[in-house]
Length: 312
Image 1 (cartoon, rainbow, N blue to C red):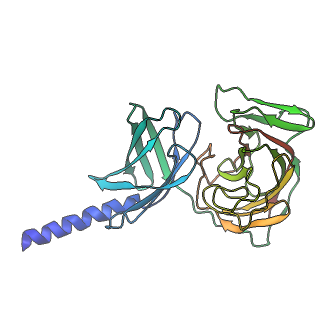
Image 2 (image 1 turned 30 degrees about the vertical axis):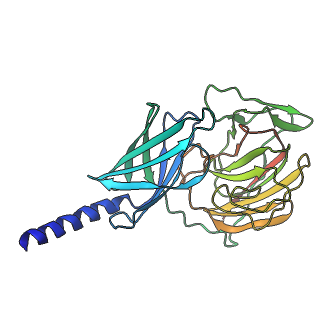
Image 3 (image 1 turned 180 degrees about the horizontal axis):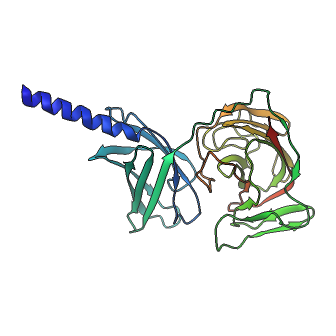
């Protein structure tokens, strides 16, 4: 009986230690090839109901983790997929240890031999709400309609791949994502854009949360639709125009609450952003961040990019 009691106590202590992995984690990956941050949520650690969600798996989605465990104070999870370029079956193993209760030190190993170190910190609690107490600051034009002053490439050592023509900035297919030199916290953002057929782009808020741009006129809305907070919040309706027409976004971000108006129709109303999306180039959710314009997919043009800070 005494041995059984000791075993129960030891198992209970082990599970209590496992609970330190619970929560949402913002992840920095110094050698990530696309300069992207990752995001991880762990729930049920220390219980039989362990689950996880992850942004950072190859592709831009938020994925439920199919295989996850904690063994010997180490979090372990993995993914299997087929590489869309080579057609090869691939396997990714992730491991992490929690240090001090508020940091993860991790490693990702892939079946092709690549190893990436990563570091996670607990996502901050952001208490600000879009409660009617915010007012406009000084409006800023982020695009001067002449050149790309005020913007730089997200991925180091990759050509920009953007130019200015006919009063708009336009990418070449597969261009670098471009990032505003200035950073912002709470704001209103007005953007006019145009996409070609089958094209895909996005707008990164604070350099972390993507409002999707997609040529999807007439299709049912979903978490990857035009107007979505990419892979997290679906628009209420599809308010897209056909390919080749100029469209408008009016976006409002206060704390973690986002409102999206697409072509004068409110498609997201003060919805809570849980965490980073795949566009994220900086994992520090507690600090101001830039605007990102995605250029690494199909053709897209932008004009009249106007940002108004929101202040108390």
